[in-house]
Image (cartoon, helix red, strand yellow):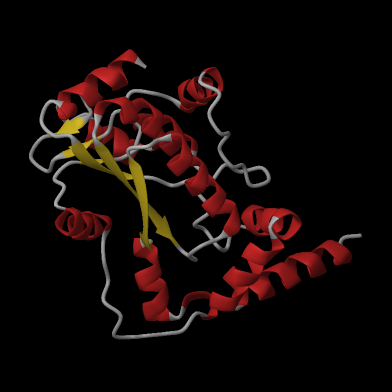
Length: 228
């Protein structure tokens, strides 16, 4: 992880307080925060939720805050939530006048509130073609100086991140069934079934806000009985 540390050090020479958009249970966020924490006085981690205060997410947040003394967590609605509310997605309370926010706008809101300029993200070139094309335009393929955004994991692959987590004995990222996800896709059946088996109270919270999730599970169960 020498390249990632070199990139982090470059930004640490410019500021001692940064924002990190942190998925709480995702591998990239877990590894990136561990790499960053020695180089900054304060790291404000921003968790974007679809449903707030889920037990299986809060245990990651609690672990992180206990492990790193220079870290604080804040929770804000995921930018997708605003479009969900506008359309009444999955039966949530509909508000046609709901203002929409992008990732860039949420970043600016957090910057202004906490008076912090630099924001870090766990994006990698290996995530998608769009991210590869974007990241390759930045300094060291990781530092957007104009927008004060930094992507130290840009050059790494999933296996590199998982190996680092294993080597440093960090908390393992959550895996929902056959998929490894940040748990923001409330229509992902692997996620819903995992919650039903492991954190039913979290599933109940999701259904309370997005009632049609219960219908998805009913249809899944019904299809399962039909094929037997």
